[in-house]
Structures are given as C-alpha cells and as structure tokens.
Image (cartoon, rainbow, N blue to C red; front, side, top):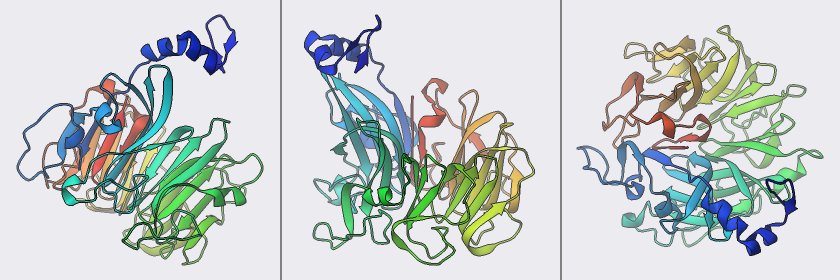
Length: 431
C-alpha cells in the first residue's frame, strides 16, 4: 500500500495504471557512489591516467562510479542504493532500480567471483574478464551486506516485512550455513549462488529476526533482534565462540552471552567484537597479535571474553585483521593490536586500547585486514594502514604505508557513514 498526500491509500497497481508511480520515480533522488581500490576503474565515470605501480583495473583515489554501468541499466535509470559490502577482493551493491512504471531490487557485484561470492556464476571466468559486473534479482529489500574472503551474506526484508539472511559463495567450512553440500560447476568447489539461510529459522525464537550479519575470512556471524549472536563456519581459532575448536555447517549460539543482549557486532577476519546494550565489550577468536585488548597476546580465545575499557562509553567497534578499533561517545578512536594502527611509524604494536591522535568528533569507524577508515562529524574521511598495488588507502599511492590518519579528498556531500563499506582491497561509500 502507498500513502498519498491526502491521506488516502491506493494499491501499487492503481498507481501504476494512473501513471502516479511513474511520477514518483521521476522525482526520486538517485544515489551517488564513490569507490577506490581493486576493479574500480571499469565503473569510473571519468577517465584517469594510471599512476606507476597501480594495478590496471584499480583506482588509487576516490572516484565517482557510473552506477548504471554496474547495474547494467540505461543511463537514465534511477538507482537508489540500499546497502553496500566489500570483502577480500569483491564488492556488492544492492539497490532499487526505478524506471517507467516498475521498481525492482537488484544486487550488483564486481571483483573476484571464483566461488560465486557475487551471487551467481560469472558469464566468463577468464582473467581478462575479471571485474565485469554480476547482477542478480532479489525478492525484497536488502538492508545490510557483509563480504568475507570468498563468501557473502546479507539481510533482506521480504515484502511481508519479515527479515531473512541470504548467503552465497564458498561453503568449504560451512560459512554459508548450508549443511547439504554440493559442488558448483566443473571446479569441484563447494560453492553456491544466492540461497536463503533456512537453518537460521530452526534456532530463532518466535518473532526473532536477523538484524545484522558479519563475514570473517571463512565464518559468518549473525546478530538477532533479541540481541543473540549465532555463528557458523571455520572455528579452529574460536571464531564461533562456543568454547570449542570446531567448525559448524549450521548456525550455533555464541556461548556465555545469556542475559546480555548484544547491540552490535564486527568481524572481518578471524575474531569478533560484540558490544552489549549495557556498554560492555566482548571478544572471541584469534588474538595472537594482542588485538584482544587485555594487555597480553593470546593464541586463541575460544569462548567470549569480557574486555574492560576505561576511556569512556563505547559507541562503536571495528574488527580488523591484527588490530581492533573502538569509538567512544566522545568521538575519540582507540586502536589495539599490531600493524599500521594510526599511532605513528614508531608504534606498531599496542596490547591495550591506545588513543589515536588527530581524530576528533568521529562518528564512524571501519576496519579491514590491514587498514582503517574514520569519518568525522563534518564528513571528512581519514584513512590509514598498509598500502598495496590496488591503491586501497585512497591517497593515490601504490604500496606506501600510512601510519597516522590521513584525510582523503572526498566531497563531504558524498559521504554517508552508514552507507560505507571497507574491504581488503576495495572501499565504497554511497550518498
């Protein structure tokens, strides 16, 4: 049903027949996207001379994307992006394509797709065709996307209002939660196109729904509307939080959080951060670099561990590869672990959360394997971490490392903290 200005309700079919839906689409604001890193060059809406050391298919600075090219639509189509995700070397963008008297939900992906992590097989897997878009229709509205090494997951609100989880890609360790295994194509890989995670309904309570998914390298974590956390996939380093070094092909409840509703989760590699509604912080998974924030290195944390933090109430968390980030309600960012932490070239390791200088009024933080982003209240974007030939740090250089937060050249009007994805080699933000 659609609500009109006079307060009267009309069905979608009535609007289509009357031409009013076409008028609504004509006045809809199209999304604008910027990206940098691997495979971005194919979708850039302007040409640029490649800098020395940068991969031919990459862009080393934030670049406006031609969304019509990515979605395979006519240039005059109106595309409203609803969710973005980026993983090891692939990215997904979900949106509504408005045109004429119709609106359809489309999932567009680019990058590596050997395990069908973009949702379905590529038309051509040859090396010179890598990066071409893969487009899938989705029944419902995609509200959130996460991407791992070779798999992807997303939360979709169906037309009846019920949320579900869709998964695709590599299922070698059960990270898709699809217990019935099969091999896709001629490669003999346990890979799948888009499937619903039906096993999740077996463990959810009445009225309980998924609200967020996170993809580690080879595991998946799901947060529900009741603040419970489930995990599946590779578990040798405690990624599933069950207290055991075992993997699972179906969702299992993370242990030790009973009676403690979780508000948010973050995972991109082999550990998970969970922020409770009451402000407490929990950790499980690999911790060999001291990224667990307890003052020492731990090989693996098999069951959830409570992390004490005295720097103020935590607003957000971001799990990287060898490092963790915390954002306080005061807008300050703390780092812990190993690597280019944002603490300068002389401090590459910290066993406890350490304040990153030069960042104030931060509203959002993101972390991936070897890099980080922070977005402040004036929509300035800061980047730091280990560089590579994909230009993933967004500063125009190839392999140079950045040890302290560096502002990127992005129009603040194009920055939306809630619509930003940071993968290992690709970053996307949509306004």
